[in-house]
Length: 251
Image (cartoon, rainbow, N blue to C red; front, side, top):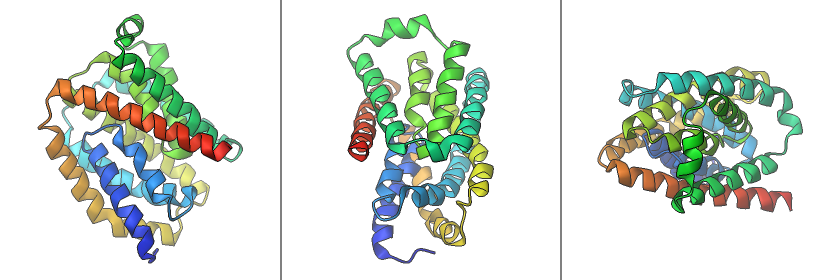
């Protein structure tokens, strides 16, 4: 287990942020890995975070077990499976920085488009289309495997559908719970789950569970219209953060 206090100064806030995201504040979660990676390598941070994500998913699944869109899940998870398989065999050759830059730019353009009221027409052209769902599900699975950055691509597909708040949150929770389970076997195969990483994950579990429950409690007290504005706003901020991190790393 990691014993460096500086690690936990970064890791505990990271886990709390991800917990709030898993509890319903979709979009926040992307900030967790970069924060934890301030004190350990991004690869180790991702390995520590995955068991935590799975436990947080379980809390979210229980809270939103009755709120999901099965059609959207079937479409997007089919694409995600392809994306995870592709990432498993190409991870070593793919630049994580380039992935973050691309995902960040996509998120920023998409969210700003909505804020400028230009997204309605585009969304109307492909509401829940199978091809688009497979595409964005695949991109989400791929980027989730490479850098836990699957949130923005998934939101590009589902946010224009204007699902009820709880259905949006529930469908998102179910999607990423399944994607995270898909990632376990490849992570084992790639040797990511060392004893040190697993014990560190275990030490952070109480914080993970408590923060996810807090997220569920908070999100159910937010008005649906305000919730969508918040999510799009977070998507802009997260997109800029991802793009900046990716650009700096490439330079």
